[in-house]
Image (cartoon, rainbow, N blue to C red; front, side):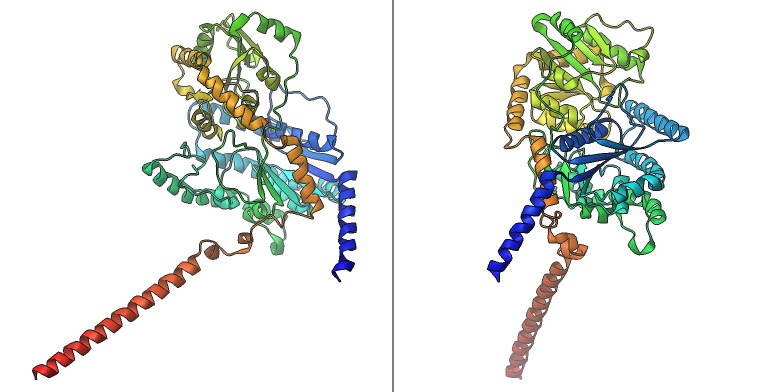
Length: 524
């Protein structure tokens, strides 16, 4: 029988392999702007360039000011926002940015963002023409950004198996069932390294336990969307959809992250946008050449932040840049520069910059950044020291790791003063230990067995060929919570111990009583 079965298995494997070689049909989704969209664009392009048939389902509004991409090699289905919805997005993100620069960002700030995502998710789910078209295309796999849970709800509605590509760091361990021993894995909002003292471990443990409450609250936000768009007998929860993903991929690399345990269905692929540098424009090259041996500093606060809504902060930064010998290339929307502020003579502002190419330039000396993962990954790839100004979201979490690796420093934006800021720039540029550490992390990242695009391609094709990622997911996904926490085992052991103690006490009492009775008889 085994001999009869072997040829059939071989034929099936050949068919699956041929199917992948001919190209799978892959759907990607993008309803978030900034680095999220840039990353999903890169993923779509890699898969399309390697023979797969890719279509992106996206909304027309992407909050990435200054960025322009005229054409893409893959197909795109676009949901067009109405003017009112477009305005709502603009006002929300402008307010979110202003609040962050006022120092009012925190873990709780995710709730209003998810509330907005849930509100607009109703609109996406009602696009029956687009959804019917996508359903009829019979995609082999979808790749979604789970930061916005609406992506998960859409592919579930379409009935497409999916891979979750999380654009941020390892977070929400209980919801994703990511092993996170609080003794040495710092929680997302802790600001700790992996080397915690006793008090930090106490705080980290409470944060670990409390993270479950945050996830429950976030699930509540999307309850209305689920109840409206799914029949009562097949309504998923967000936890169900997190666990249903065939594979989880995190946009993280251990040249930045602290070592930690991972399950087989959780992989990390970082640096998709970090590549060998291309020559910059002649105009920029001429500006850089004027710096001589001093080189230049690149300043960019992320794809979504093209201006700073605080004139006092702009003045302090501009004054600090004027006091350093390097040329400064600053990504800043020129039309929003304060009219009464004269730009420092060594500073050039641009609406958009070729960040990766500038970081790979021989004369780069420092990256001043918000601390987003894509920017930090590119800095690590090119071995460039970092001065970070974290603003919100995962950025404070990321820059702790950069400082721990000694490839840079960070400064809260509300503490920036001209002299302090320029002193930090001088320190990082002149102290060669930062550059040495950055180059060390670059070697770690570049010497991985496979480049990130091959990792992405390999894992996607592996999931398609093997018919899903069930062989990677642990059985714990099917266990009730009390079994996962071993509460039934603990209760059994406790009961056994209690029973043994009870029996021992009873025996001792019986023996004492027996001895006492005999002694009393002898006395009588």
